[in-house]
Length: 158
Image 1 (cartoon, helix red, strand yellow):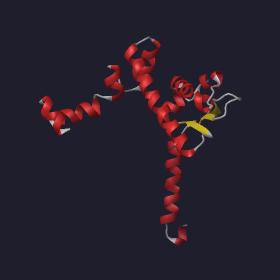
Image 2: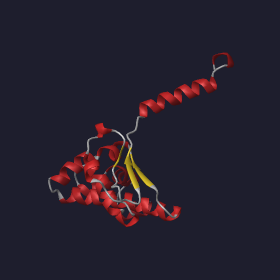
Image 3: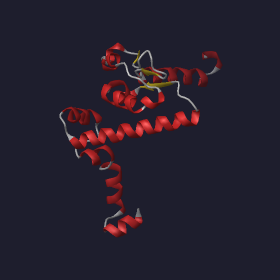
Image 4: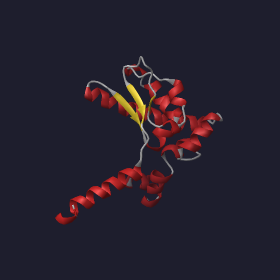
């Protein structure tokens, strides 16, 4: 980065700000780094938002395919967390990219609201099972706290 700073007459702090705050989805879209904002813009036909999402999806699919090659097969894909749980668009685009691996979407299940909870979003004919599994971070933190309390508690309290 120091070479780039010297060639562009920018400070390292300026370059760090650009790399960490103004690049990625925001840099490509010119709108936001929030995928909810970009997805809304996607549906409104905003070309740079569409490019940002396509780039994001391509990278996800590339990583999944790379891991599948290392494993010599792919049994399943789990969509979870904020984007994986809540964006039927991102799931659809990722699954379309991975069709070569036997991923096939069930559009109706993919488009269902997250209130349906855990669900299979791949078709019955797919070679790879794809599912949405909502996270429950609060529950996991509570379970971890209980476990830590038991592990670290004096014997008479365990």
